Length: 164
Length: 232
Image 1: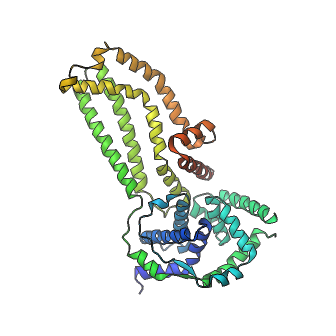
Image 2: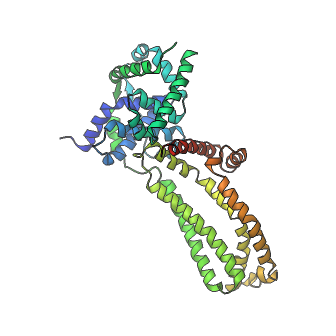
Image 3: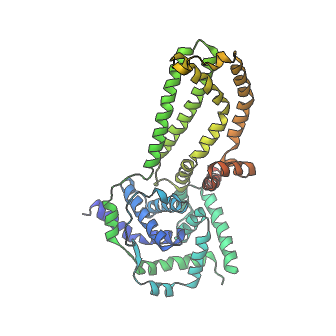
């Protein structure tokens, strides 16, 4: 039987990609990415007691992680109240290899995502991760219609950027 | 380079497997985070608002005492009530902020949480708006203060009562300023709002009184609210 703390670590291990992708999209500097990753895990742990197991962990995790990322991005980082941990929370085991393997289209896509506004970033990250309009609506608080409209606008923007 | 977003979506998801292999979670850091004392990052804001509440409550109690002593004398009662209205409004404002902080929850959807955070961040604008709305009431301060000095027989100033010294003209001035400025203040209070961020003068006023950060935050709130509004 896992303790609450072990269960949390296991869930974070299974979903570490979500934290990585959010940090990569909301922060340009490595130090900021490390700080944001810690801030996300800190807030997830703080709210873990409220997690309702009837819902998907990834949906709950996205809600908190995106809320933290947007606040961080908007300059709320001055409220950071826990001690910073010197080591990175999520590390590349082999950075150079990963760099070479990443498709150039994906790199380009990531750079376009980085240029989007905070809400658009959240919506496109959820879309690319295969979340349905209904799930995106639950995470963002916008209706499915609005989510659909936003996705189409972002698609148009990305299409224009890719065709340049 | 051309690629449809749907193709990119497939590529993005297939890249997830590669990503899973190439990134590693530093579990020791997770344990360190779990060992940290859980506190709310909004605690300093909460304390600030509590101090504001205490300050406003003291002012309200003192003004109620003043009103109790001077209820039968219209000029003083009028001035006291006007100031009381100001402090009650600012107290309600601070209580609303405390309620917002207490209900702050990153478990809620992005639109709800981010809107609450922006409202907290733009608190300063509310004070500026209230200060302007209540400009006419500031004329009531000399009336109340000089009467208190007289009532409590504070030696050097005991003889000075602005209402008596001005033969009641101070009340007339106060009344007309009130009549002219209150409707203007109410109009201004309603105009300076995130909904009117498209109006250049509103944007300029907020930027000059509260700074660029608040202006950006209110623009963000407008965007969030417009997305939410269409949905419900």
